[in-house]
Length: 185
View: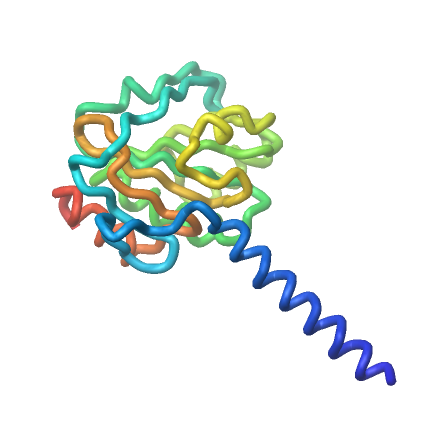
């Protein structure tokens, strides 16, 4: 009887997780004109790219930063992360190593500033990250689901949203996105 209860509970949890994953991706289907790069990743055709969101705020080190200051010098990755996010542990070093090929702006989501600074330092991330303790910055990123950490928007040289990755960016996805944007791989 106990085994039956355990199996039933596990089956219910699995069904809920699968339903939740489907719900999280609702509205994020890849239209035929977009190019999928793997699970959760897509590149938008140049004629369909939206303007970059306006993002400004205080970095984890206390400096004021505006995303507009990073635009116009090659591709920019706007990456939503948190110290409590397990996939972010693998993703952050990938982005840190790529920061010579793509400018990276992190958005530390609903996190303690001290924990976030320690997390970034331990993973070699020298790129700036805006503190988003209340979720306001993430809420302004309409192209990203509000509960998907990590997520990344890639902006082209003209400051338009060229690609979106919902979930962690690995080296292969990063290489393919940068290749599609004309950056070096």
